Amino acid sequence: MKKEINGWKIAGGDDVYIEDGKVLRGIKLDHNGYQVTAYPYRQSKSGGWDLISGISLAAFRAGVRRGTMKLM
Image (cartoon, rainbow, N blue to C red; front, side, top):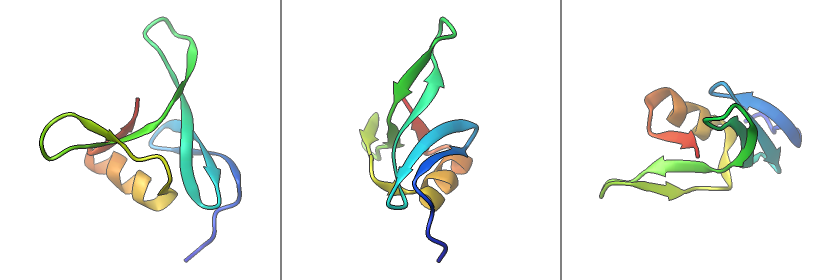
């Protein structure tokens, strides 16, 4: 498995910050077009979204492709 270098990467069209191979936070545009800090969330089986800060970059990218994870 490839170890990710710390710093900013692009995943799922969003900029995310990687530290020790884990996604901690990201930047996205709000409804006014301003950049804001956002955190990774996973769709919950019971409805709603759960915070998942600290997930691997590969898992986050796969979740974004499936539509079960996103930055909020």
